[in-house]
Amino acid sequence: MNKPLVELVLPRLAKTLYRELQRFRAGKLNESQFASCFEKLLQNQHQWLMNRGVSDARAALAIQGATLVLSTPGLRAEASESGVPMEVIEFRAIREIAADLARCYEVSEKKVVDALTRIVARYGE
Image 1 (cartoon, rainbow, N blue to C red):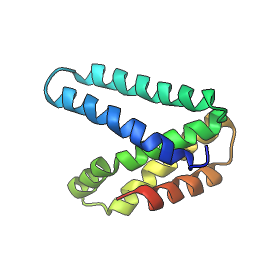
Image 2: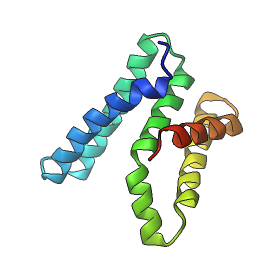
Image 3: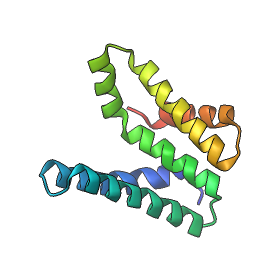
Image 4: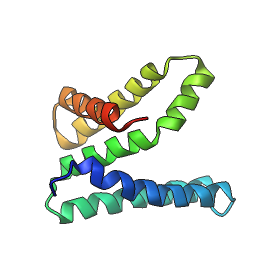
């Protein structure tokens, strides 16, 4: 796997997430069902990476980074609705994810913030 992990995960997540969002918007899934599908998608991606020799923590970081990139339209909408700059909303999300990953995987929160910030800067809109 010579590509950055995010480049492997982004298209896989985007494709399935888009399909599930369409089903949700069409009323074929309720919020609970959509959340369940999304959770299963993330778990499957995590397992897929681990089956290819990626460590648990690196897999989680790549998946969370990709999810953050795919969440950009929602973060932008939240920023617009709240009147708070997009960068502030985005950084709050990064810090929340970093705190969670640091706690779960016993890694440096600062390093996770740095990694997520680089992912968003490179792959975000």
